[in-house]
Length: 156
Image: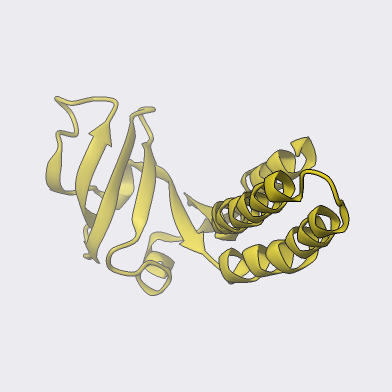
């Protein structure tokens, strides 16, 4: 079980970063993406992108380390003041494949093992079925966290 928890955190450890110019952001960012910004003065902010303008990204700020300098709400953050932008992206479909694999292999084996025991069969089969369903739900959330990746763009 500990292995699965470590495996779920693996994509967060493998965070990619690229050095780009502000002009390249227009083609890389899409409306609705969740962004984490670090300004040159060290201020941290999070928000959802609405559009990329020539002055900088316009986003709805939901969290800010400096409420007076960068308040919540719709703001245009100047490219000159940005140090880095981190984008959360979801790639892959492990959230659909992983539960299926877990249910078919481990869940089926536990149901077969529960059916093979003569005594307490009425106890073991429902436990094995609950274990199988739990593996499916846990596999979905594990796969979902494995699909999430973060890419950091450091501005020149």
